[in-house]
Every structure is written in structure tokens, then in C-alpha cells.
Length: 98
Image 1: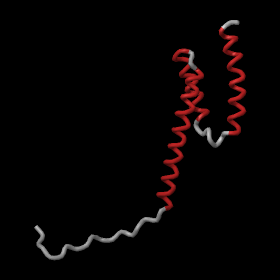
Image 2: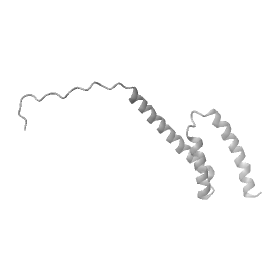
Image 3: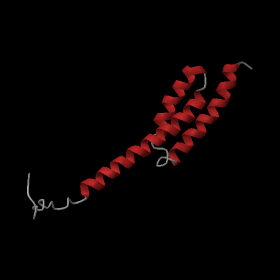
Image 4: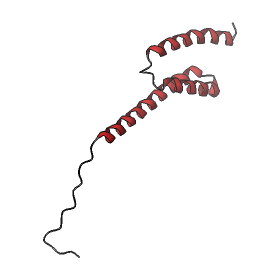
């Protein structure tokens, strides 16, 4: 069998499994799909390592999405938090000013 045929016979079942698992893991996989696509292309260009690139891209994309979500939550908390009343500075008592 040629190398292209072998790759297609391996890639097709993997893509089917990935497609089925993406629907069930949508909440967990935020950022993974975009990262996997970019990683697969980069891995393929870098030396026909598309699967490794996709795995790394998925991990990096998920991490970036999680970080972005945390930043958005932090901003929402800061916006909803009431500002404490500001007190005027206390006057200086006793002593001379220079």
C-alpha cells in the first residue's frame, strides 16, 4: 500500500471519532477546534506532522480560551463591584509645613 493510502485509512476513522466527540465535549473544547486546525496546518508544513500539530494546537487553543474566559469574568466582577466612597485626605495636625 502506498503511504498516501495508509494515511487516508488512518486519518478517516480519526476524523470521524473527532467529529463525534466534538459535539459531546463542546463546553470543554472551547478553543480546541480553532487551535487544532491551525496546529494541523503548521505541523503539516513543518514536516508532515499534522496530527501532532493538531494535538498541540488543541491544547494551546483550549488554554488561550480558558485564559480569555477568566479575564472576562474578572472584568465583570470589577464592573459589578461598587466603588468604595473616597475619603478626603486627613489634615496634618501638629507640626510645621515646609
